[in-house]
Length: 334
Image (cartoon, rainbow, N blue to C red; front, side):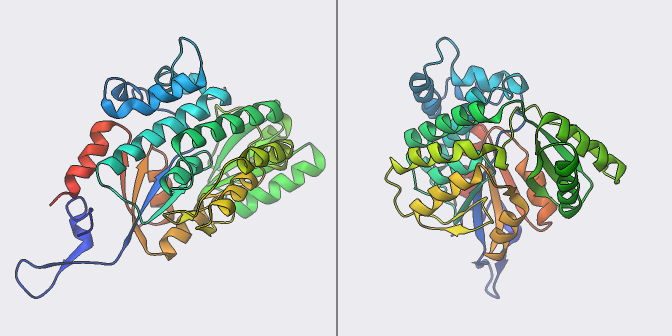
């Protein structure tokens, strides 16, 4: 019986026989957050838990000296601007959540990750090992740091994607380079680019009726053509890895494509560097494939709200600590 029967009993229906419960054929997706705000205390629960071994392994491989991965997670927003530390740390956290969930017997029907989260999704899909994923994320972070320059990112709330896209095109003609980088949910868009151009686009968005414009504590021009210099060397890093057929279908950020080929998934990871993350379409695609249940695994508890805005009928669980992952597994047991 589906492991969500106890966690989400309303997704199951009884037949005419007393005490008989028939599962409704619906799917579960594991989702993984990207580089966003990290709640204080997200790393500490893993420090003395046997399931925290990925943090120890990552700290050894990364060689950050006296600062380990859990220290980075615990520093919260202070580290987010340093992509070279934030991205490997967040990947490690999401990977640790998934590997504990797997060890506890939990399995997804589909996987998806938001931006950086797509690397943990690749791990969950069986396309890469933990070490391979960590190496790729490190390379991605290095290239992003080298090519992103002084770029900045802003969240625009309350305007349609199309309106924001048009604003960016006008600002590019008149001020500088700014692009729509993320379509997170209806009414929530992220723009990225050169500082002056992003600031101008934000001002025009407010004038056009945006509810709020917020600066993100992330330095870089992620998911825009300004990252083009990083794409080729990153593909070279991918080409050195044998990417097998995925065990679980992955819904890619790049145009919400459903992927089973590891090699194709790798190419789409490279494309993600320079193309927008369309999370709205990713969730729409998951829903079209029968997904009604989502589990968010990682340090950032942001995808839950986005998923609920995109699919109001979705049931979402969050697990970011060993206890939370084990609680999900315990709820699944008959």
